[in-house]
Length: 508
Ligand SMILES: [Mg+2]
Image 1 (cartoon, rainbow, N blue to C red):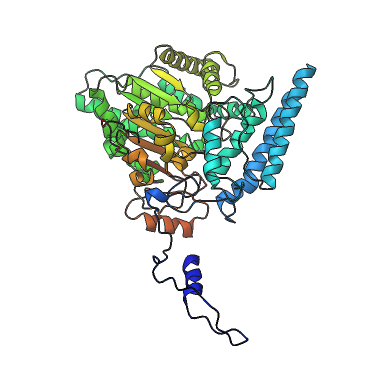
Image 2 (cartoon, helix red, strand yellow):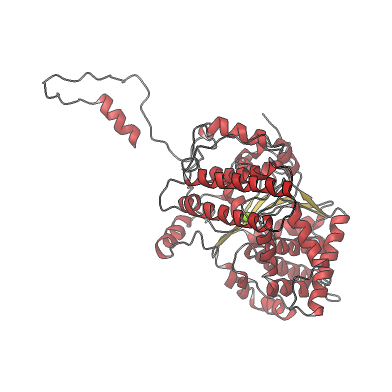
């Protein structure tokens, strides 16, 4: 719009000035006519500072991006400092104390920079595998940008990388996790839901004697649908949405054609679950089938992911599940290898749940032992590619992490969990609600060899796509009637892209 206004000033008849002289102006009639930016931008115009649709930026007052950059992130940093101080108070060795005090000072500096919306500086060479990726992106796209005018996704990710740097340049505290205590708490506080699941799944899942093949498959389908929802709502803070799965209820579901499921399903605004089931079902006939999980949060959510992955193994759908976590503390609650180990070990050896009965504790222990066995046998594998902790969206995964793209292309299904992964899949921009998922995720769907991709996400931030042909109506109605629907975690999407599996992966 502005571009046209400027154009008019140059090229229109300008009224005479006070002295009666007419101002000279250039005639640009042979140059191409100016055009407004139209969305989506064409591929050649897209880069990390210019997503396909308008970016969310911290300076957009009243936006969630603004609230995050101006309020949430400083609060998170403040809490992180409190955590380090708690550790500091338990120390006795002078050298370690001095080293940790310096970490706190660096965190205080970062907090100040965030507060003053300082310019984004390069990451120090602290030996992490992602330094080059970070500094290349800053130099190419964010030179001179600050915390508020860089796209929200990048600025937010950058903050977590800087927080990492506060510790990686230290001597004793390189692997310190300021969020570890909080992450453990989310599991400890979920005891009801934890035992709800462990008491059902501790014994390996078995079919009734002599059911027909159709009956078996139908039962598996119903279990899959419910477990997918557990995997989904485990990502929400509202754990009360966990649904029951007694034999009786499964039978009821069968007789009512899934009415009960429909009850919790109605908040899934874009729902490809039926197709997801077909994809998983068909893996039964494939040798060496593999599913990948791009994890989101530690603690209770990871536990739900494990239950889901366990079902996929026991049901004979897949032979291997690869879990992709973060190399270091990321967006507060994301899974690191330490969180992964902690969960499995606390299930087997821990004393977290003092109020639980002996039988309940035993179910948790059995489950933990089985899952550790999967790990030993290579059925479950934890991976931590450096790309997952960069500011790049997954539109750039193909070009910036070709090894990772090639690796994922060999998977039969890649499940991305949670809000941040969804933001990164969709370039975190203001795409229309009706945008189809495979359009919104760019090369992750369109590149040759792209795997089947599923996003399982409770909606906790601005970008919402995949709501179908009637998406604009659904979205605008919620905008009008239900303020905050995009950040409440009440709504969700389960979206699937078919990709181009089996085609040769090529790089330019
Ligand atoms: Mg997370």
